[in-house]
Image (cartoon, rainbow over all chains, first blue to last red; front, top):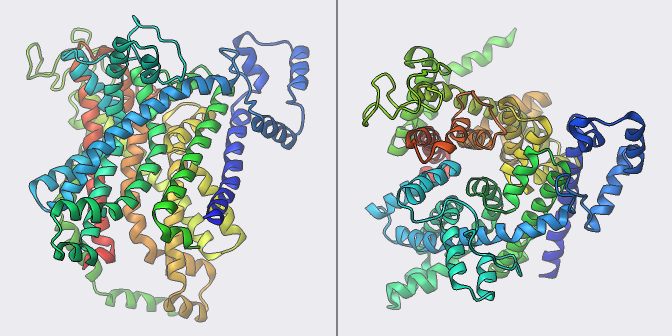
Length: 336
Length: 299
């Protein structure tokens, strides 16, 4: 197992270096130099410009600048946001819990509905239910989620008034941030009304963000389940006289889950990317919205740091998924 | 002198595979429906200047935010209603179809061309070149596609053309990986070795002998690539990083329409329906093609 882990970590290194190159290139490929960007529309006089270029190391050769950048990044220094003057790392980690909270709820929504629906569709293969599930999930997979969000807001917020349109919690509540997770913080504060409000705010964004993972999980569970059901050991289990529920839930599901877990893990990247759109629409104060806002206000240090950090998170999650995969499926661990 | 020989061989080849594949494809009702929708959308897009009741940018100052023709207060001139500056939504959608299909076509062509070339190179020249190309693709795959597209657009500046370049780069790894895998599987086969012994040059081996046999998974991926390109371009447009207003691009139209969500459901609804239907059609067709072209699923 250890060599498996080491091999996977070793593969990550070149990829991570590549991602740092992209992030580094970002600030150098945009038109104009970084000092002009910092100065903004007001402009800057040439002497001061040259001095700043020297001070901030922009006069050094590119490879030297890259090494400096990497060196600083490894120590957690990703520069300061032009707008807030806050360190990018601090800003990212202040907002990140909001994105995690939303993503977890979206995943929960996708798995809680996707798994049983996929299993049922596999058992009743060819039935009306199966066809409906496949049709609906293909539509979900093709869904432009930014539009889906608008549609849900239109129905549930504007017409029915059931859910709030945007934000994480009603403005009436102030909750001291402890963990950054609104659901936990409100409970820690013992404020059940605030908790209800936070939960209320989570519903629509979670559904929107969870739609594509839901479609993927349902389809994957169905096809993986159908394959497993055909196996000999399932026939044996049935021949032993075990009940249908026990055969499906205990014997078949365990093996059918292996590819599903992988797919769920791989969906994390999709979730983070989807969070960019979902957070923008619901004014959800997470890293996705922060990134888009940073791009539109040309806050390049923030964009650069944000891309690097999101990529690092995605790579880390993928690594964890791989290890989990090795854990639940010994065949992978021992393969070269 | 012997240039006519291959032609003769070509003529003798039975038309079998195409017909066989078509039969498999046509047996899938969903795939056929997808194809039908794509044909209709393509025809409408091509004929947009003649079919559309109005010009996409024409503003009717007397008809701001009119609801669709069938609902109360609607106007028969504007079948799907008008937007906040009195432009006909149906006409804008029809012209938008041109953009979306164009985006799909350009992105797929770009990524296919570059992806096949890189994949062939990786598959034929193993070793350093291969690992260099594949590691590069791993980097692209490590980033969520929309995030990477946003990063590229941040570098290039927001416009529809840059959005297309960004999306083409983002989807590149899929084509490279598919081509490489297929090439590696093919190059060990007898016919490749035979033609190498017969003196076929490297380029001939790559593009004439091996590539045609690697096309099945690429065709499927290209079809699915069409739908993801349309979806991503609309998402970038929606974020203000793709086509810029007043371009009648579907995602951009939705971004404009957001502020009227409380007053005018039709401005928000129809562009999304257009995106969903188009993307769904391509996905249905892609699924059908996969079933028809995958030899493992044929039996």
